[in-house]
Length: 336
Image: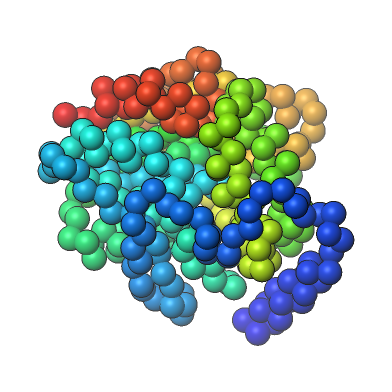
């Protein structure tokens, strides 16, 4: 443990001396736990110990003015936070749902440990412990992007507590490591993450999240992500991001889709092209990865009791790109 921690600190010191050109100067700067970035609802904290670490999971617990007795748990993606569910929280609470939206350990406003064995099992267990602390017994679990992988793991681990699984453009609908994406070490991911800046984030989001479109309101989410890489805590942010890339790459859930025992709703923007690390794959393989027009249908076929709703003109984040249309479809697809 001492050797690994020393290695991390050495990397952190080295990265602090990198040329300033590696960091974009546009936009605000936030703390390692997203201090300075306001969430749309009050942020609470769940304190617990895991893997010998004292941790805090930050979350929003939003009640409805006209409760229907049901709760939806929202799970964010790899480059997202609980705050990016802002529109969905409003839409759900307007329909009577209580909503829990947490930042997973290693992300956004939650603790970023110097070392943590990240797994979807661990994050699902953390989330289940949070819900138990709130006295919540059964939930609809809804995940976007990486959160779709986590929501699937939650439903597999806790089928009795899961009323319905909802996935919004989940990643991991294919196993990239078997399809030509080469392995990248945590150290390599870390070095790559240190290059993160607002310009690169915006370009990627426009091409992938919004199918080439851009609206001024999307800038908020660019600044949210980029701001953590500009503050004093940028090294620990990049380090945890590298650790979670390792988790995503090595822990596909796609092979377990046939074993799901809960009703599942898939909401897919078919112009999505997300496939982590596909730029490292051979050109002939790269073009075949991240084809959500195909992947959504494959997932729906593999999952028992699945319903597929597609948006043929939307990208990776349909809930942000066209929220009214997306939320109308979501409300129709939720179990009554």
